[in-house]
Image (cartoon, rainbow, N blue to C red; front, side):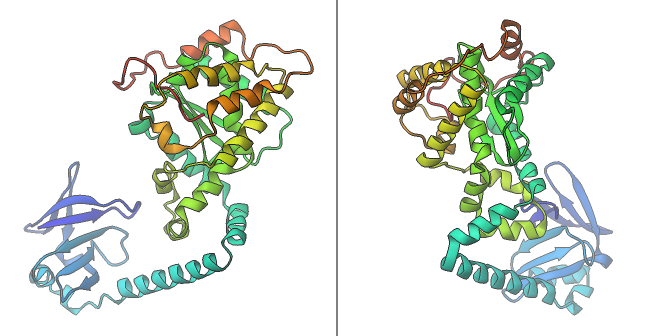
Length: 361
């Protein structure tokens, strides 16, 4: 029989083929084979007069196997007679409780969502935010393999420390670099910031990278990633938290789209950081000018993640404020060479030869 297997640790189902073996159900997955002894099988739920059934390998187990078909319950009971005697009330009661909780939460959200949202953001566990952010940063299907050149990462950490000196951030900043050729960067929950290597290669000076990094730290400062995650996830955030698999929300968090107000706020905060750190903002303005001249119709990961004010407006805003004191380059020449080589030895995905314009900064 065809079935769907759930490992009990995430909500993702995996296609499975089920066979009646001599000692139990043989479950064949793409990367593993399982054996569930007949005598221990437990009925979790049954619907449509036994046409749709969920079973577990033993009572209380988190793993699940969902099967459907004509008389599937009777077919299973021929091998595991105890299934006929079991009452799948636990599955139904849980469904009712979950449905009731969702309805109750929806009612509360409808009555006072802004107040509820502020409360959720205020008490959102930092450990959850960290797990979600790490899940996003580690998604090598979208962002490529992680880069970990020691000297390059040390230069980036020194730049991050310079930008955040004296700031009271809601969570420590953790910067990652991935081997994607996209010209992009984004802030994820938990203080995680991802710079795609295409952006570092596109930048013509360390001041440009510093400006982009400062902008993303601005998102962290104002907790934009968590605010938008609550907006997007809504009820799923609460239901998923019950199961404890908050790391799975990393996929959903990839749908985050910051509004223009958020982006403008991150721009202003990032500009304040550059000036406080004695880094000239001209680099970031030059970066925006160059991106504006590129083909902005290309479809990139970044265009799915964010919306932004026009680059020309952002560049003009940055040039409207000048440093009042001395400025020094964001990195030394050696640090800049190290940062540009941070992905040396890491394979990049096969993309267009010309870096993508626009980006997510």
